[in-house]
Image (tube, helix red, strand yellow):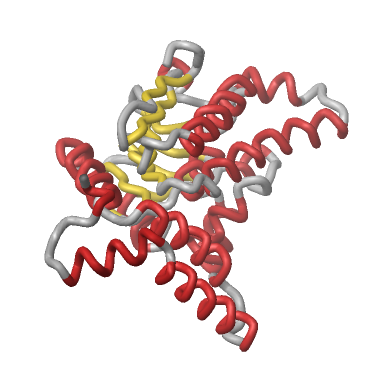
Amino acid sequence: MKDFTSLDVDLQGPVARIWLNQPETRNAFDDTLVTGLTRAFTLASEAREVRVVVLGAHGPAFCAGANLRWMQRMAGYTHEDNLADAARLAEMLRTIAECPKPVIARVQGDAYAGGVGLVAACDIAISVDTAAYCLSETRIGLVPATISPYVLRAMGARAAQRYFLTAERFDAAEAHRIGLVHEVVSATALDAKVDELAQALCANGPAAVRACKRLIAEVAGRPIDQTLIDWTVEGIADIRASSEGREGVLAFLEKRKPSWLG
């Protein structure tokens, strides 16, 4: 799509691809990029044919955090200006995280600060083995506040206690060990792995995939009490009775492809 100035967006077909496209700034955030990502993921969420979204980046870096010129402008913001600016960033991250379609982060290079938040907001993250990661905010007297819900969900509080506070760089192997990324591959294998996952996701029932995303969001971190059990019981009963659920079970029993595979 040609109406995105900082992104390369392709929403045609079952696998949508959204590329950060400011390699000259290492795909660093500014207000244009934040607005563009929010709009692109909103369109992908609404596009009926889209089953999976891949978030990638052009250039050597995935995302270097905040753009320096944007940060210079922010230095003169009032408290109200900063609230509005942070709210736009938070809305962008939430739009990615709550996209009803599964989102794969294709991390081909370094991810710093807000770039780590982008990776964490995606459902699945595949990293090239040469990528470096850094939650660098404390180096300049800031904190990773807006991205923290997604990064904490991905890496856990214990790892965050180290990397939020120290602002150390860590490599892709460590990102995998702490859960920030799901798999680490060579640069030559990156696209094949992303495509493999995209095809696996496309093979599943689209309504079931959407329901699984909601299920994870609702269940994670909650006590296993009667309220939660009742909610899960209702959820499986609803999906079994749905047209997609009935078709999937019937196709399995009849040893044929379900209707969503054509």
